[in-house]
Length: 270
Length: 290
View 1 (cartoon, rainbow over the protein chains, first blue to last red):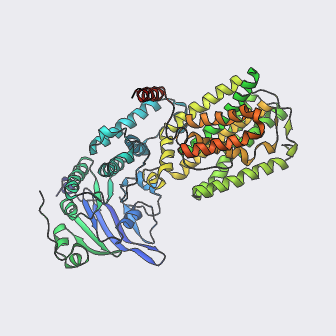
View 2: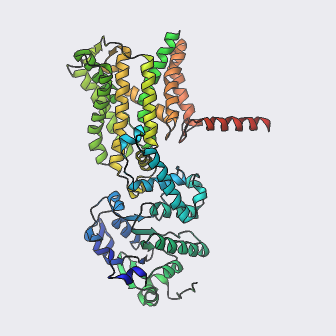
View 3: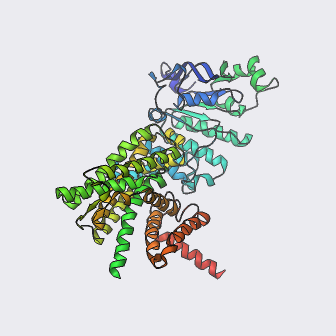
């Protein structure tokens, strides 16, 4: 139980009510209904093609919902543009890394820091007022976020020249720089070996607490999911299969049959 | 001779102004235009009509040329960019816009149709051009090195990710288009008062292509690259006037060679800087020794 939940009535940060998305005849998500409380880490798991990333795309406004509503802090957000949703506090990373490849690591994060910057175009073009100072502050902030994921000494490197694992971390740093309240991580440990993915899980835990986030996580590495998530939502073929704590999910016969495999046994965790 | 050289330099720098504007739009925001000559033409006619018929002060007319072109940029950009036209479709739309503008200029009475406007006062001198070109380069530089410029670059690199960074793609693209249109307009205003005669047939798709070619050959994501390329594109054909019939061949060959040997352009994603030049020569010397 974390301190926030104990402090008072737990508040729901995000709530999905009967969210359905159809692409022509294909129903990618059907009647998704769940909520995340403030300070929670929630896992979204399921086989490939279950509609997990589609759910992320619906929450972040990349797709419009066909039916249902998405509520963030008592505000309906479906129908808003992605950039508007980012500004009210939802940030995400991508399953297939989407960095600004030709830019430096620092510039990647600067673009995210810019999200809450306000100096005007005219001032920028003529370098009026405190633009120079603001620019310096943006870079310093960006460096802080890079330091948070351990990339501060690679700031001037071109983003796509870094190894894969670092690119994933850069995506997380970039998402954090948007100052989100709700962070959506789409397979952050994809392509990592078990050791690396557990290290990443530790990092996610640290960042989650340091930045007081609420985190929704898609992941296939079960040891990452089971060690991080208080609550897990399992999807299969676009519908909910199960919902509950890590223990409940691991003993759910339906989940074992559809996804984890009959022989699944919980791995030991530190 | 000096007069001849200053003539080439003047024309070159007028092109530099338009090219720098287009570099912000194409090189930094990632959209292609095949109709930027239209903004050049609108600026030329706006400024010329104001000084010629209404006796407006030259610098005011120049500012009006920039504003007018920027306004037209807004009008053409609003529907096309709002509809999120893909880059190639957008290029086709600008091609149509460029031709439509030329036809319009040929048929309006205030522009005196195809006869053009002769006898515009020669206000544009080399020092004026140098000052304005430097100013435009400085402003463009500041623009691309600000949060607004970074937003444009993010759109060029990956517009889905850019949207997820809180960038409004429509506003970002429109802002760059208006900026480049205004630069084109100012260049046009200077052009009109430099040649003292304008007619619609000066602003054809050939000019649009030349501007875009200068940006691409100079390098995407660079300002100094397109500046150099614009000067080369104006300078080389002039120098080759002696071999008149080979001029266009040499020009074409130059473009082909750049695309083969430097597909990223002269200075793709880079700028000329003193430290960069020093590094280059240091490497050169080291290479010669080993």
